[in-house]
Length: 181
Image (cartoon, rainbow, N blue to C red; front, side, top):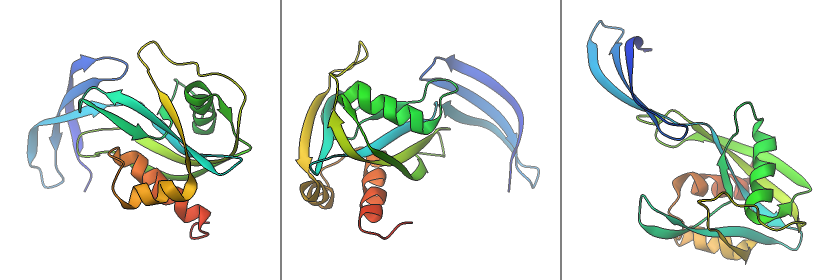
């Protein structure tokens, strides 16, 4: 079922948006003359629970959809960075919290028909505020501390638009409920 890539032409080459057009050959010999791929670096996100049982949610403006969304903390891996190091760094930068325990609960592809990257999903527990936020120039993030069971209710009411973060919450709740090893 694997396709053979005959050629690739880069249409855009940017750190966060690299797009290419591939010419591919399917196993039966059929040529696919134009298959477009957006290359993204891997990302991480975490359902981060403080030591007193609140989930750290963030609100930020998302320009592609033109809305302020409620999401989980996370972001891109730096080149050569381990996923667990990346999520600990992102949690510290975006929230100012350090965590006693960070467990990977899954890995998902956002849209593998077009996008190349995976998102690594984590459950972080035992969070303590140890610092202030250290945001990138383009980030404006408001932190919300929401009780764990209220986050579960928000999830059930479909109040989260970011699909990768929804996946993270579902897997994190499975782990918390003892349904995931």
